Amino acid sequence: MTITFVSNYINHHQIPFCNAMYHILGADFHFVQTQPMAQERIQMGWSADTGSIPYVSLLYEDEAGCRDLIQNSDIVLLGWSGHEELDRMRLQTGKPTLRISERIYREGQWKAVSPKGLVAKYREHFRYRKKPVYLLCSGAYVASDFHLIHCYPGKMFRWGYFPETVHYRENEFRDMKTHSGTIDLAWAGRMITLKHPEYAIRLARTLKDAKFDFRLHMVGDGVMLNTLQQMARDEKVTDVVQFYGAMEPEKVRRVMEQAHIFLFTSNYLEGWGAVVNEAMNSGCAVVASGEAGAVPFLIRDGENGLVYHDGSYGEFEAKAVYLAGHPLERDRIGRKAYDTITMLWNAEHAADELLRFCRGILEDKDAVPAEEGPLSRAEVIAPPKAVRTMQEDNHLH
Image (cartoon, rainbow, N blue to C red; front, top):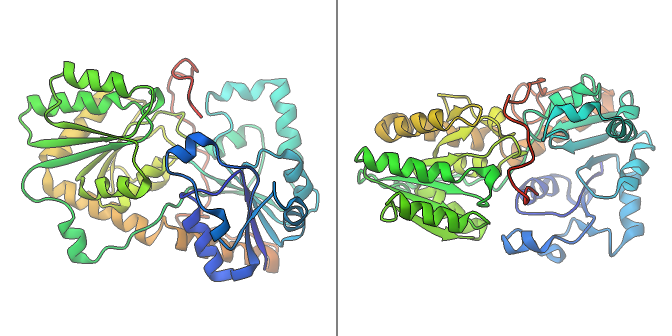
């Protein structure tokens, strides 16, 4: 069985899954990169040395070879490639294809009534609804978007991003967080409006007023950095808030490993949010916005994390303060979060499930879903009823 994954570029969020696939399939697994990585992403530490990865082929260096892989592989995973003609070439073969997608109506499902948009969606998706084409939903609200336009009926499955999973020995897990009484909280990401990093600074003021012994670690860069630093000065929390700026992914994980609580505050414009995977894997008790795509798939509220809704700062603050004041509950949730990633939502498990799923398609012409986690059925979950505007930020992508 030959499987080819097509996407714009490979990055550290995809490499663990691709490595797991290559470990199983060897030379029968390929990744076609369709364009060089954007400079912004390279500066964020996302770049990969494609020349050292044996399964990566570059469309812009070997177009004929890549087209052959896309057209003739037994299974193709189609991510966003920026080359609609390549997608169409594969889909018209009638061979099994798994499309991987985040939300298509992230800014508002009202866009589904656009005649121009509907024509495009018919061309890209609807006309293949009765073909062996399946949708892997990288986010909890993806199925709702596609259900709205009657695409992939009965063929939508849970998927996501699978950053590197670390398996800690018991003593490592126990000792990587301090037990001195000081609470470490962390926030990480691009400091832009849709990610609401200001929630973390407001929380610091609340925790300081309540006399908690804590430190807040703010990781990332972006257009809001100077504003947040001034906000920290205005709120008189500079003694308990540390700004790190942009950091390489490995260093971000070191910050997460020492954090007891991770704050994930993105709104509905966040398609997935891989920092949630990473923070859970690091044993953090995560307080997460339910508007982001990863959260309903990864977090069961009160069991392996805490979820707040509709961007409510008040609910966010209440849940974060609760965790700060309940160390045993914080530890229990952090352990459950770790188990969720190491046992279910990880690259190796996703690869195993994908291969099982694909064998079913090729051998029995039947796609059998998993019971839970990756490749389980994606329920149609209505997106949060937040205000749908595009006024928040000019740097959404």
